[in-house]
Image (cartoon, rainbow, N blue to C red):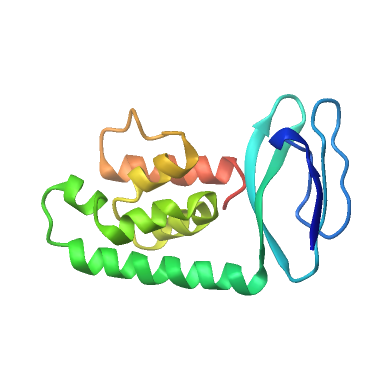
Length: 158
């Protein structure tokens, strides 16, 4: 595996598949990936060109599977160990929650899937890894779940 260039970590019009993709105008990204590699792609709305994707990191498929397994284990542990906490700040400071936040953008699709299947207080983790907050104006938990799921769908995570 080799990454040929991620020019100053700028946005690039790329697709997550083997081979080269050239960017347009100011977007210049090209990379070569092996079939067994997984790229942590972060979608970002691009001006007038639809969706641009940014590769944050490349992992082997086995590493990606390990990260997913780690996420699942920490998510279950967090839910079990904090379900009776009445103070949300205590839930958010739990070691498993912080480890999930530490996974970064790679955790976004998994967090959104958790919201879809078993809604819980994943909003702060999503806000931390995405640097966005589509639920800031929501009045209820259900509205916040819907706002985050719509956000993820709009950015290609769903």
